[in-house]
Amino acid sequence: MVLNRRARRGSNIIEFALILPVFVALFTGIMEFSWVFFLHAAVVNAVRDGCRAGAVTPQTDSPDTAAITHMTYLMSAWSPCGTNPSLCNFTAVSQGSSPEESLVCTIDFTYEPLVGMVPAPERMTATATVLFELQD
Image 1 (tube, rainbow, N blue to C red):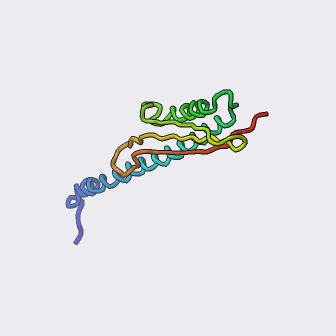
Image 2: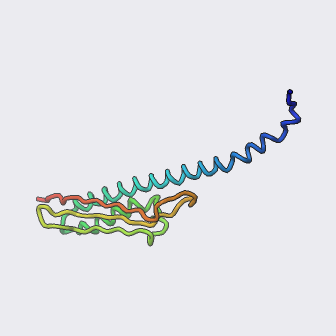
Image 3: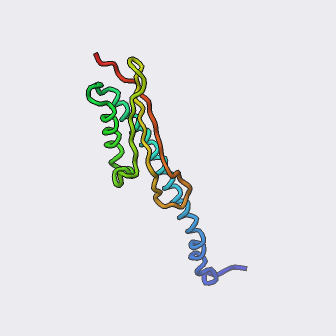
């Protein structure tokens, strides 16, 4: 039995309509998870770099403020902190005494999903601890 072309007309469109939702779900899932992983890496780098910037600042120039300023700058370009600063919380606290004094920095923000079709964290947090540089 040989099927002619007229008997199969329209089957391609039906197959496409059945597969399209699967491809859309797969694509949006890939995009959402990629965004989560990118933001996580960016937050970790921002808190590390900001804490380092504060640790090399002389004690007389307020290292806590220098760290928060640098973290805010790094997070403002592409993250939710740039568009809605109320979502983000930056902290930098000095602990201990010289010569083992350290600076503990934290970034905590509310994650806003791109699509919302896949499970994602509600909050993202990163913490870094850096020893102060001894300034002579």
